[in-house]
Amino acid sequence: MTEALPLFGLPYEHSTCRDIGVVARKYPDVSFIVYHSGYESDQREGPYDPGNVKGGVDTLIKSLQDNEISPNSNVYAELGTTWAQPIQATHRGICTGVIASVRGGKTTARVH
Image 1 (tube, rainbow, N blue to C red):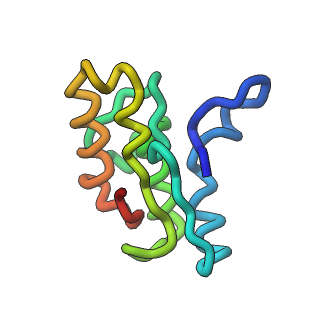
Image 2 (spheres, rainbow, N blue to C red):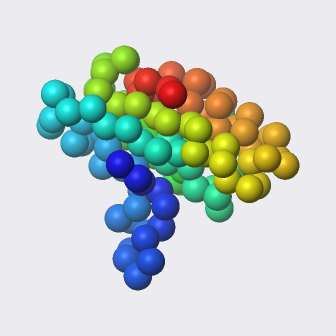
């Protein structure tokens, strides 16, 4: 499942991770792999703050927490494609922010 990559001609809200927790809860026997973990190149990533979620990886974490998805459940937060973004190779702070967000938010997704 690819979320957070804006789809050409479609509204932004259809490309966020806000619905991952909803469907993961509704279909517990299905595994969901969220490529790039919801990363958005125009969002500043940093430590997860549940009171200040504006997009990106934080949207995935909040969706899982709001829908009470258990740790090591049926959602996988894939990070390999996140590092493939050209900006990631030269901006170590962004990489650190993504990791801080995923780990600091104590995400219930499995990180791969």
